[in-house]
Figure: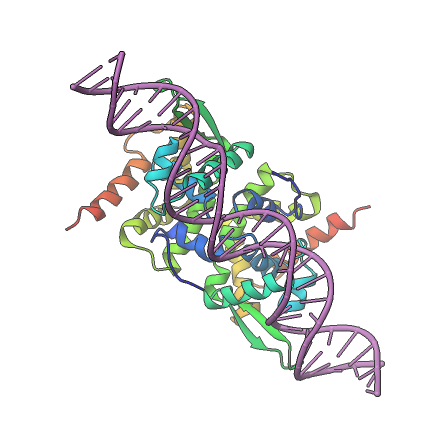
Length: 164
Length: 164
DNA sequence: TTAACTGATTGCGATTTGCAACTGGTTGTA
DNA sequence: TACAACCAGTTGCAAATCGCAATCAGTTAA
């Protein structure tokens, strides 16, 4: 964990924290897939991360204050990972990357549907979804009630998957 | 250049193209620093990329249709690199990363000023800047005239640097 | 003629990656 | 109480990638 920074450029500094092939995927799974435990992140990932890489990245993200870790009261060995406020605020970055990928790359239909909805929903939907994440990860009650963005995205995904 | 994709997720696919420590910095320099030649990208970069990495990443970006390369008529060996439309459309990704880095990381004052203005300007300013990039990289005349976003960002940067 | 400049390429050690097996402990069930 | 399944990681090792320095061959201006 050497902290030699290459420059004080905000884009560079951001890349030094999350600019690898796995960190943003872990955050994606925590945001959109409700993965909160090590095993969930390990086995339910689309891409198949290996356990040593996952452990290493979780450490890095903890150090960078993007996630936190608490003990799970239901199981002495289980840890619950949560996004911090600054972790939650990476959502717009992911949303823009998803929108770009959806537009220009060979995205699969199942996995693209969320990106499409999120892109169409725009910054307003992102803000709403971030409020929901603040509720589930930080325990901050959200104002708006009713069908959540998270639920809508999940429902859209499942409707594509279950279409025979 | 093996094209084994890990999953059809738009975020993952985007990361497979630009998810390394250098590609987005090269694109940043082309967008905000007007770097169009190999030497400019090599020597005028804040971070000091090495020539083999630069050559490799330019190849990857060419393959991914994010940039193009033309011969410079003024010099038989010189090449001019330009952003394509999909390269230009990475601006919102960079802008969001810059905004996040500006907010949460120890950004230097000189290099942070552009991020601040771009963040405050929001999507409207991004669209304007993208139009300017379409003009300088694709030769598409932009509608709006007057002081460009690029000029404004550059002027703000210089005013911070020259402040004694 | 020659020095500086052009876009790269090469060699090589250091770091990072990714797979597989394994560790030490906890929990549920019979 | 025994035991299998589950938990969060760790370790060993081979392969790939990274990054620095030196170098290359062609081009241009003095």
